[in-house]
Structures are given as structure tokens and as C-alpha cells.
Image (cartoon, rainbow, N blue to C red; front, side, top):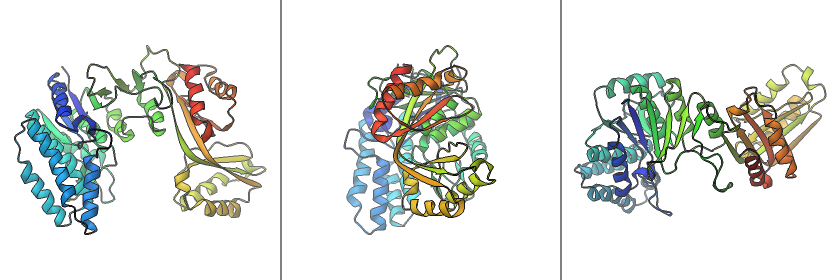
Length: 437
């Protein structure tokens, strides 16, 4: 039978209708013994996520703005879920305690975490499963960094006591204290992954509102093909470009334990979704698994004669970025040139200082800055060892009359990344997709 950990995102627990679907999914397979849930998400366009409402509620309280009406909206969401499903639980008591602690000035992390806490509290009662609080189980150090091994041991010990359990996502606590700490947005995916690792799950199912991953953004490519199977390595490359429905940090705990992830659709439970595995499905004949891209990059191109002979040139350039607390994304080089690709938001208010430091410390012959650059990645293990894969990407773009600002390919050969002017982003995505699919 095996063992499955199932995680349901905000859209899957948004109201009573969605929770009824969730219950049917859980009860359809006895292997689904551990359930991780997010806070209720949007029920319709224009609706608010509970997490956002809790952030706002805390903000209003801290600014001495009346938050009573907003808190009542949150309470009504949960009350509506409870009554529509005839759940028996002391919701009023839980809400009163949260409001009391909000008045007492408890931390933002604590207040915001109550979205997941109340969601799991009600779902546990609805399913008849045990409720397990992640405070004291998902552990952070004093700097807010997740303690992976300590978390694994704590979860393993606690979950072993429960045959079936519901666990709230998104938060834990600082080790040795009662102080609640949040994971980053999308952190419920990470919680599910940590639970899957701790119980040695055979599969980690991540239920959301899409039937797995698609080969491209449907806002750019009409009806893109679904991805039936993809490797962790390929997913990491695509996630970096923002193409994943899964929080990218959620990959690592299950990858270490070789646990497959199955992305499924709560609204279409019979769809097989996408399997994410350690190795690519050998039966797949596709050269690429997906195409993804992002806009708003800046390229700083530094030129200097005999750069390759100057010891420490690249180190000095990177130290300048570090001193200005700027992360870079790519750094393609030539014998006398160095291009540094940086998300434009990283350079906000810092570009002139960085350029002055480059001029002063590197003494370049010339520096050029290209703004409004978009990056596009064609990703696939099938590219490895397949002659002409990169050439096909470049030819498709060239035939469309699109000029390249950058080309970068790692020695792993599973991705080719190109930079184009943002105005040609969508067109470049379309011609690359057409070339391969």
C-alpha cells in the first residue's frame, strides 16, 4: 500500500466545497495518512487570502487602527467552513485566544501563522485525524534559518505516535523557545516535504488548482503540453525562472530521501498530474522538458584588454557586488569581457555606486549597461548528448529576427539560457516552444 503525505494548498481549502473535495481525495486512498494544509486562499477573483488578511490585521493593530471588522471577516470565513461541513470544534475559543494575543502584542509571525493553525485545526476535526502543531517540531535557529536535521528528528519522533494526522504548514518555532517563526511564502510546500522525509513516505502528493506542470506559461503559449514526468534537477532550473507551482525549497528534503513528488489537481483528482523524480523518465522522447523565463534583468558588460591575464579580476568584481549586497544570476565571460546579469530590483538605487566602484577598482576600457533584458531558459535532460540542441534554440530566435544579449550554457548541458530585449520576450518564448514541441 505504501505511505503518502498529502499537502493541500490555499485554493484546495478555501471553503466548504473545496474541503469536501479534499476529504474525498484523502479517504479514496488509505495510504494518505498525513495531511498538510495551507490557510484558506481565494474563493473567487477579488477575494482575499486569509494570510493577507492576518498580515493586515496585525498591521492595523500596530498602527492603532481599528481592526475589529477585519478580524470578524477572518472569523466568519472559518465559521462558515465549520458550519457548512457540520464540524464540531471549539473555534470560538481558538479565535478568542488569537484576539487576546493580538491585543497583547504577540509577534507578526505568530498572528499570521494562525491561518494555517486554524485550517489544520478544523480539517483534523473534519477528517477525524489527530491535530499536530508544528511549533516545536519545525525548528529555526536564532537567525531564522531552518534547522533541517533537528527538524527531521523532532518530526520523526512526534509523527511516529500518530497513525493519521493533520499538520499546519508555513510555520515552526525558534529552537529552545516558544517563539513562532514563518517559512517564506509558499512554505506549506516545504512543510509537506519535511513531513514526507520524516515519515519515509513513498510519495509526496502536492494538491493544488492545476493538473501538474506545463511545458510553458499558458499566458504566453496557448494550450502548452503538460509535463508528465520531470527530474528534480530540471525542476530546479525551471523553478529558478518562476515556472513551478511548487515552492523550490520544497524539493530538497524529499530529494535527499529519493521521494517522488506528484503535483495533482484538487478539482480534477483523476488527472495524473506531474511526477517529479530523481531521474528523468527514460521513456520520454522529448529533448526539452520545459521553457520558462523572466523579465526585468540588467546586464553590466565590462571590457578590458588582456583581462584573462589579470589575476583576481573576477574576484574584485564580485567583491564589489558583495559589498553592495547585490546577488547576481549569471556571469558569462569572454577573453577580454565579463558580463554580469542581475535582477534589476537588486540594483535599485545602487547602480551608480556599483559602476563607480568598477571604474575605480577594475580600470576597465569600457562598461556598458543593458536594461530591460529578459532571460529565457530551455531546460531538459534530453539536451544532454543531443547534438544541435543549443543551435536549435539560437536558430529559432535568429529566424524570428530577435537579437541576443546573452547566451549561457552550463557544462551539465541540461539548459540553455538566452537574454533578449524585454520587448521580444513573448515572441522568443513562442518560437523556441514551436521549435521543440
